[in-house]
Length: 336
Image (tube, rainbow, N blue to C red; front, side, top):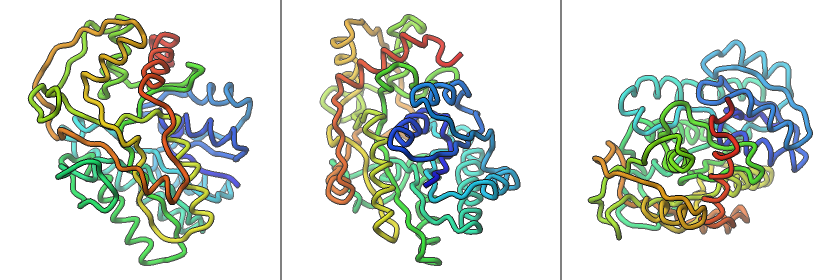
């Protein structure tokens, strides 16, 4: 079995590549390195002692993508590639629509051409918009509050339409909540370009004094401490969900959506407090205005994934905080 991993040099993709190789799968990684670094490819090889083909390719480059499909006999695709910043998507929505949606259409079109019809798609909890209650299960109404989330929702619709047109497709839509943490070795982790958009890499950069303080977006949400509440999941648990999804698609046809989360909600201040306690690091912070498009509370009901995939998150918040700091401490400048 050979699996194409799009976006495989990125944060989640690199961890997935390690887990796939450890389980004996053959992989090919494709990434345009726009928000990742080739050094992650070297470290995947280092951690697994295995080699694999890597292509610096953008999904918008249809001709190059077709050549890759002609070279390799893929069994399935795990599709991580895409722009992912909520705030940036509000500022440059057209880039997000072009990159995420057109790239996925190109990928699916060439998958169909080469008779590769098993797909695990990296979706997002942002497809639930402003949920009326929590925990969120897969039956909730779908909507979005920002262009990034709308690209995920549109792609989900496209994939459902694709299956309706050709029922030989097998598709898993994995709705991520908030992945944090890093490989326990400290060799791969989240490596954002410039100022981090996500909470944990910002905290870890403050912890090693790379940044002066953390900016907390909003203190007047209707939560227990006024800060936003999210379902934080260790990236290793998250990628293990992808392996379970591949196994599921081996035995089941159709399109199915699954939440990948822990089922617990933690506020920004909860994360800061736990991180400080576990790592014995003070994290100075300052409250600033809310970010456009952010919701107050978002955490998963992961029961469907446990029932149908046999998957559940195992790592706790303490491990997430510990592994995040090890990665940042060992790699203060990321992969540079």
